[in-house]
Amino acid sequence: MTQNLLEVENLRVEFPTRRGTLVAVDDVSFSIAPGEVLGVVGESGAGKSLTGAAIIGLLEPPGRVAGGEIRLGGQRIDNLPYEKMRRIRGKEIGAIFQDPLTSLNPLYTIGRQLTETILTHLEVSEAEARDRAIKLLQEVGIPAAERRIDHYPHQFSGGMRQRVVIALALCANPRLIVADEPTTALDVSIQAQIITLLKRLCRDHGAAVMLVTHDMGVIAETADRVAVMYAGRIAEIGPVRDVIKRAKHPYTEGLMGSIPKLGGDEAKLAQIDGSMPRLTAIPKGCAFNPRCPKAFDRCRAERPDPIAVGDTKVACWLYDDAHKAAAE
Image (cartoon, rainbow, N blue to C red; front, side):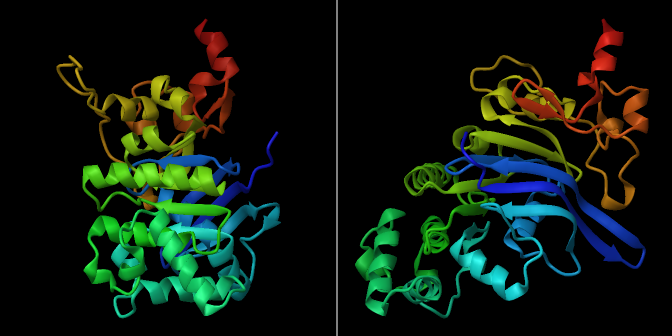
């Protein structure tokens, strides 16, 4: 049994406001093994990116980790001082963000940005750092890397900039990569290349990857397991094939039903009525109950914890033993 590299237990992220405390991530637990890709999917506002930001230690104030634990390689990292976390963030955890322009400094060449990161985290000379930077650019598919290393971010296309950002995330051989919507700003053909690249790098470097996205196609192509988030909680988590082919939570069923299929003869796609609740108005019981076609009284009164169903865990009272016995 491979020991998990990342373990998140009962994570809670809060935003104090003048009108009270908003809970944006509520009691989220999952783990990622070395070499595994965990996809985290859900609508905008589900808490996906905030979960990633909490792991990296980049929550925007006044956001804070108010409960739970985050452990990397067995070491707790959610309570570390800023400087210690900053060293871990570059060396142990790499980050890939949605818009590569916000990750790259427009005033510096990409070579300078790569070599500075390498020199900060690895004990190498400047010449060795430059050689490593060129090798990384070649590895992520930048043509003529020896020449292009001295170019500025604006001299690269969107897809090439995202490749540079991936190289930047890999500078110090991190054990964990948090990729937040890494393909959203790119066109479809470039998306496929970036997905293939991420999978190969994960396999070659043995890094664990947390892939945050709202695109189930990206998840199906890339992830080993998938966590479906809704209103700050995990609704369902399990092997990607099980979750996509045999979705158990009514919310996951709705997500899967809303995806058009090639050659499908459905006259109309399924849709989930309503919208995600605001943080100030999360309903009692299961947060999905106002939109759920299968909701019953207990769903409106009690919040379900994840229930193991085979290899999947699903936070839904439909799978509670008492409910199944009553239905039979």
